[in-house]
Image (cartoon, rainbow, N blue to C red; front, side, top):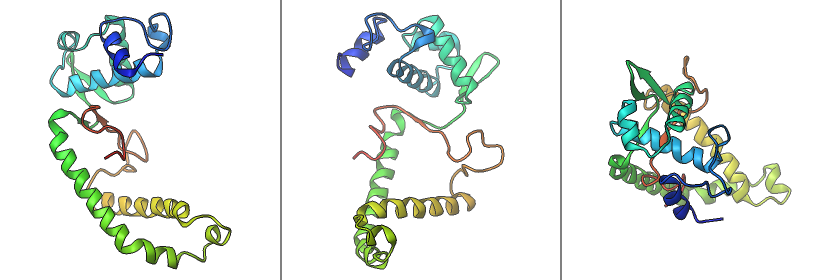
Length: 193
């Protein structure tokens, strides 16, 4: 198996998928090919390549894979096509968004760390009588569960106030979440520093 960097160089010039000894067939894309193709298409459209001709120049894909990618992304609502022009149907963070994204993540991290420093010990004491801790589960594991409920309630309140998109609003295609696509250089992975 080759490294992801070697595979990306290889794939971008149209060679074999790293997971097999032959090119991935359009009907049998491996996960890595699919993910890279979708990201490339979304970033290209978000960056202004909004026609089939512009996408052909911007992305090194065969015509069949490009059309299949556009068809899939349109079918799931990530792209919309009007008058032979594509527009993104979900938020897309490109390299131009990196400074703002970095600042928001830094601020969020500072707020969360300050909150945890101020509240974690008291919370551990207040929740010590719950059955997970009585049965020997470390508080850190129970805290993760409590944190997700707290985060969910806070998110619901913020969405209902109009602060950000409500993932449960009527007419939402994806109930419970708001899709987001980002360039790999903008956010390495959720939760990373």
